[in-house]
Image (cartoon, rainbow, N blue to C red; front, side, top):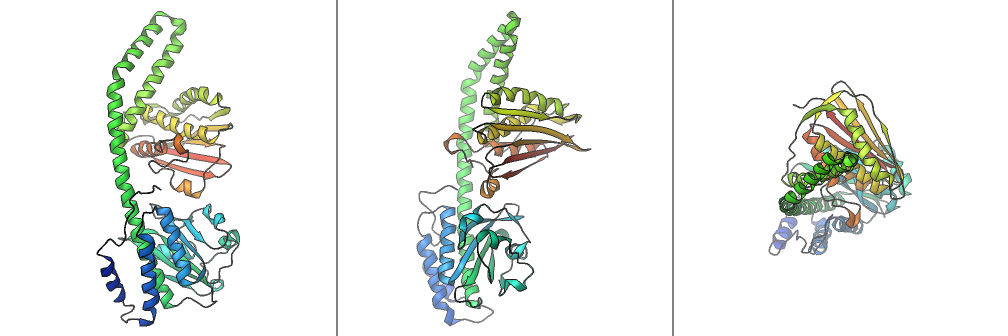
Length: 426
């Protein structure tokens, strides 16, 4: 997430009074509940107070849970975010129990568990006694060192899109959740949804601005290096023709220049939001083997063993230049994840209508949060050492081939990226 210097006001000047009046007129099932107004009004003011300041999304969601725990007087609260496909929920913020244990918990399929049911059906779920509800599983309790007795769960959504689920667990008083608690949690969920959406929209605008800058820079670089690169290539060809014993080195120079120019053009295309392909028919296995031979030189110098498991996959229609960049990017990520050496395996497979490639490493792996954002533009776990565009470009190239890319990872064990593309392009 990117922090924003100026922040975003959920209730800009001049709107607080209107929101408050609307809130005071809130009706539940057609009737007003005066007894709950004070607490719900306090909840609204608390949200306004906390959110009318600069924030990033991570801090904002943590503060939402603090408000939830305080106002509902519960032992724990969790906030799960949905992925863009709305198929999984991942723990983002936790209050109560072993919070760190859940931060790396695997994503939960939408439809599973109480939170998954609330997400799938877009309905509030009140479970007074979890021991009597088949939707509840005790796996999370074991990891969290917590005993759940009752749950109140509310889906987070904006314009019909699922953003996540907000949960409150166990009233401290030992009583069950009431209608007033549900009203408060709905209020918190609504404001959290609006805040998440505003931040995400701002991130999209920020990303578009960054892409525009990268596009201008890439265009300028291509213009500036075109003549020098052409001169270097010309002399390399001359060396190759006049000195056969140096031909191998000249070919490496030419290949690396093409690689450099290709990287810059790739950034330019990506910044424009499209990936054009120059399709050729070639042997999939031979292509991967040739790229592996080039990669092995760099990897060996860093104590990384490269193995290939290549099968005869036949001929495939694809863009060799673009796909070479895919392998370079994935191998580069694997190299960075194995700073103390390790094993990188490139393996191919095929079926009747498609071919596949797996890139497996024995690096540090990724936790659930990193895994969720691995294909997000500008996201990088390398600090200042990465642009955050490598895997985004991989995804863009594979999708341009009408294919799919996926990843599995285990912290401390390594990662596996899998690519699959059709044999023939439409």
